[in-house]
Structure formats: structure tokens, C-alpha cells
Amino acid sequence: MKKILIIDLSSLVHQTPKSMMRLTTSDNIPTGHIFSFTKKLTSLFSNISSNIVIFALDSGYSFRTKIDPNYKANRGKKRFKVEDVFPLLHSLPCIIAKKDDHEADDVIYSLVKKLINSKFSISILS
Image 1 (spheres, one colour):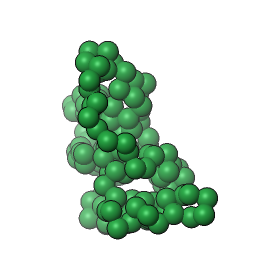
Image 2 (cartoon, one colour):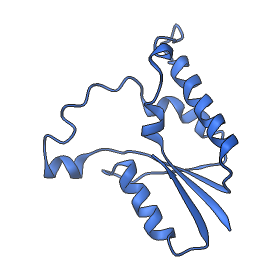
Image 3 (cartoon, rainbow, N blue to C red):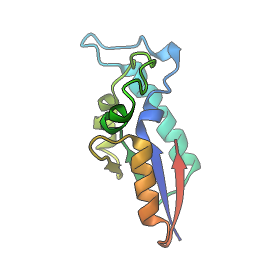
């Protein structure tokens, strides 16, 4: 049976340890953040074998903020941009899935709903 691993990219990206946050280049590229993310991926891929890896990506909160304007209003400013790790992701054999105005968990739900009756074993990291 083929295995699919679906990863909430935003969740994984924003787990950088505080000790790595200040490491940047003179051009303000967050090297500590990128290194931490790369280390997590390396560990993850060495412990989980999958035929297909899909990164689910947030692309906004608009449909939820229309329902409740205070949705995630108390969240602090994010320290890093998800886009910082895109060069790394584009070098990997993976799929990046997103849908306009949806969060990664909505994308994950949609993927699982489509794949649930297929011949794939599905794992989710969120």
C-alpha cells in the first residue's frame, strides 16, 4: 500500500526554537529559522517512510474572518514567513497544496476526503 504524508507547513515552519531566531544573514535572511526547519524535515523523513509528501499551505483566513472578524485577532505577529523555506521545498520531490482563502487544516481535510477510499495509507502531521 502506498503511503501519503500530509504536513501542515505553517505549523511546522513556526516551531523554530528561540535560540535560532536571531541567526540571520546581513540581508536579513533567517538562516537559523531555515536551518531549524531543515533539521526537522531531515528527522521527519528519516523516521517516516512515504511514497508521496504533500505540504498543505495556508493562503489566508478570509472566509473565517467574514464569519468572525475577531478570528485569530489575539495572535501575535509571526516571526517568520513560510515563503522563507520555499527554495528548500522546491528542491524536494513533494507537492505543495493550497486553496485560496483557506487554511492548511482545510486543505488537509479536503485532501483526506478525496483520498479516504483510495488505496493509500494517509498520515497527517499538524
